[in-house]
Length: 114
Image (cartoon, rainbow, N blue to C red; front, side):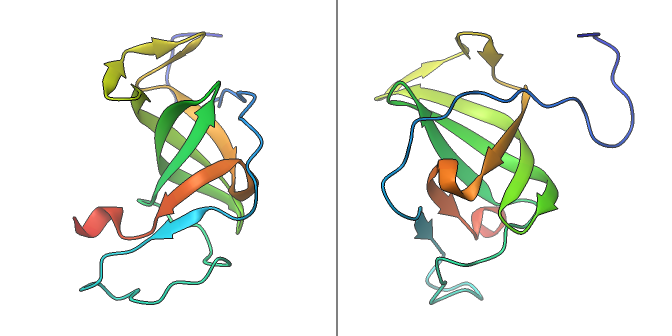
C-alpha cells in the first residue's frame, strides 16, 4: 500500500466482518424523511453502517456506493463496549473499508440529519 492519496475511490481494505443473523437494524430519525424505512433501503453516501469484527463495533460512514447493497466507507469509530479504540488489527480510524449490507449489524440512514 502507498501512503499517496488520489482523487476518487481509494483502495479499500476488506476486513472479515462477523456473520450477521438476518438483515441489519435500520435506524432512522423519527422526524426525518425516512420515518418508516425498509430493510431493502438502498445504501447512500453519508449513511452510517456498523459492522462487527470479533464482537467489536466498527462504525463506517459510507463514502462511495458500489452497488445498492455494497459500499466503501471511512472508519469513524471503533468501539469495544464503551471503550473507544484507535485501531483493531490492521484497521484504524480513518481507513477506507468495503462493507456489504449482509456485513452490517445496523445502518443509520439519517446519520447526516443528526
